[in-house]
Image (spheres, helix red, strand yellow):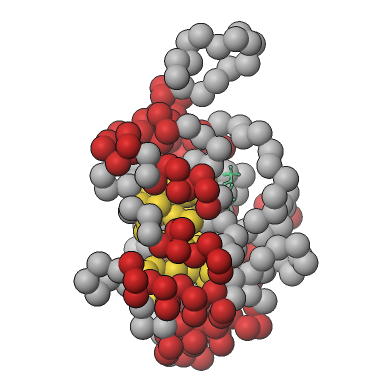
Length: 264
Ligand SMILES: *Cc1c(COP(=O)(O)O)cnc(C)c1O
């Protein structure tokens, strides 16, 4: 598709050049945010997940060619199409897909069979963990484990998915003890939209970190071994300041998206 022949000249489409620029700016901001953190966090290098939902393949390739490796998608069908796209398969051999949307148990196999699936960040129940553990046996190569994160409903909003904070330790215990095909990478939250960091530390980020600290204490795990996926375009620097190890940034790299009404 050519972006030079847009029918509406006033509607600026993102180009490969814009993507490179957007990515550079975000990486720079991450670096600055990292350098300003509390010393005990200095050793952690947060992963940038470029959230490419609704965006075309050529823009993903452009970001990949700039060195970006981690990409996030949150619709099953869209990830299926992109992960199997011949251009992606040819040009992005080392791409690492993060699934960051709501995953229904009956769609698990559609994700597990995908080339270069790297992690499921949105495991929001013990039941889903059990299903992933059982089904990964069919797809794993040699003894590879499936990386997962437990999604936590830190804001307590009814429409949000995620394990309630009080149940996180139990779900983690289940994953560690009963899911030999899974590797726990950390905890993830989406949180409330529109929080203003001028009002102080974002309560969702504080809550996720507290869940992490509690489970580490209770289960005797080093906190550095449990990642925190938090922070999006509007607040990734703030999230890094509060200990994020994985930021999921979409519109600051790829430009505005047409809003989908689906709640994740
Ligand atoms: C869309 C999405 C993002 C990225 O949002 P931006 O505001 O565009 O950076 C991050 N995480 C999840 C779960 C998303 O669905």
